[in-house]
Image (cartoon, rainbow, N blue to C red; front, side, top):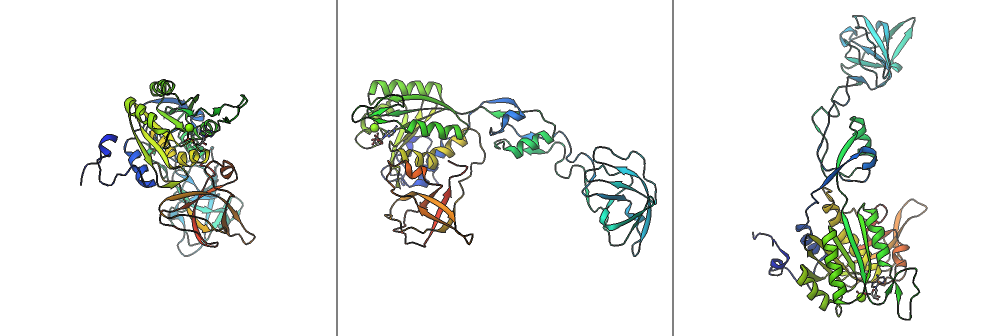
Length: 424
Ligand code: AMP
Ligand code: MG
């Protein structure tokens, strides 16, 4: 096997590399080869670490649970005291509550009333549920059929002291935050936030707050990109609109590369516009321009400018969002330290709409998943699918992913969907 290309320039010599018809998976795979997590971390109080990425393997300083304890409300007994074939009566010597252990030693013929989470007294090795005893006058009578060690949680059973409780690269969700607290750890090391600069290109664009002149439109991409970056926990650096002027673009690219880990632009990478941008980017760094076999989102540029990763997204608002979710999102998670970065889940459901689809490219149509009165899920397409119609994203709650070889879809056929909730 040949070694994978080490640089984007080398890549262009690979046999299966065609920048004018890049499969979605192939483009993802190429990008993934050049991604390495940022090499810096900071220490945070556990409560401030929500949604950050753990920067170290976290070892448990304690056994979890810390003591042998009861999984049930009942009685702690010595198994050897129980008559194998009949009833046994034991004297109740005391009580072990969660947080208030029984301090005496349990003699033969005795038991201790114990609550869930209570420390198992010395001498006891088995818990009998309270439902399985008859209690009277400080004594309990227990039937047969118990198993040695039942309903008892052993010290260190969940996690032994010194074991890895959470691995580096784990995203810290409420469950992990709680787990860290349960180990008594007040501070953790997390990767620093990824710094992502972004700007829009285009002479036709004005920012909100400015009245567009004839032929001008409001810049929306910068607002969706800002939102998408915030959702991913990145530090978003808004560089505004940069006009289609080589000098202004050059200084914007250089400024971004000097301050950010990643630069994302929208517009200016399509045919007609690409030429001077291409020339400029190849002078400043190492950038490849692809026509991805997908819709929407055909043109895409990827590369490095200095140490910064560069993603040049198309200009059309829907293409921006689709290419961001299909290529940039997972790349940013990997750079931010997430390990592993798993593909987003998809599943299949019947599609109630007829879908127009040309074979030869992957399509990401926008869909609405809903559940009918019988509890079955199905998807329908949002209206017009033009790549400039941002409403098709706003109305959608899922992507309908139509694979390369797929043609038109008849109503009722199964399609693959990817839910946006939690992703978008
Ligand atoms: P481009 O890729 O620069 O040729 O842009 C393709 C289309 O997307 C054009 O119709 C642009 O006006 C539109 N477009 C580009 N950038 C933006 C933006 N930031 N916000 C809204 N529309 C945009
Ligand atoms: Mg443009």
